Length: 309
Image (cartoon, rainbow, N blue to C red; front, side, top):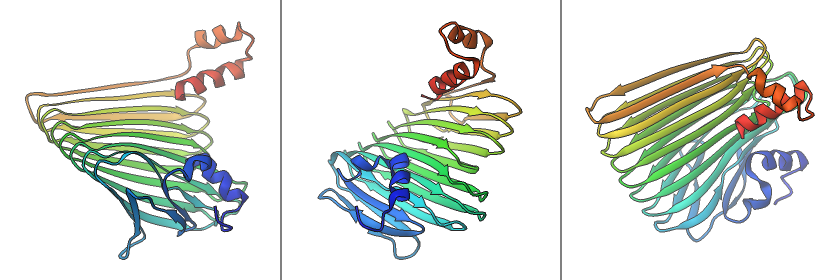
């Protein structure tokens, strides 16, 4: 790593992108609105956009099991960063992409990162996309993250997306859009924890346009103190297709969680399912752990950790 990366940077990178494994493949590090370090490989090329902030990532067809890391870190208070990253995944490629943003804010001004990521998968391509968000710092300036993910799947391709909000994010609006052609599969797993007065909103908008396309969306969240969370899932079955959307949430204190499912079948063979469960931690779960030597507070935390695991 270059001298441009200090200890705070390294700590942030470890939280959102696993610094130790980053150099094993292609990567691009963005800090305070600027690209500061990059590595390309024989099969993965990364090019800076010329018309707006961001990068284009090109993966050659038949590329197998390569890692691509594209972390963003912000340490400048008052910065509002906007970036557009487009991924072009060749036929039958199979890659792992690790993204995410870490914000360190020790001052009174708000720091914000808005990342728009668009994925274009050719026939037979497979992507596992891991995204982590994290905030830290002793200042009263907010840490704001608004990720947008757009996924376009061609015949026979699939994408698995894992999105985790670790902690410390004051406000986030997370939007995920999917356009699926025939024989495609889109799997999304989201985990969020909020506390204090934090706010989180998630919006899924998936169109099942091709025959035998499918989507599986799972959201697990914990809201404590006076935090608020909103979950909105919109799935449209426009062909013979299948989808399953699930929202499970634990609330504590004065927290609020709202889940709004919307499923629309525009085809007689569209099979669309939505489930939602919101409630407090069951008392018998706490009592069971307390009999094993946990305090009540430790028992609650153990249950939360297992729920978000």
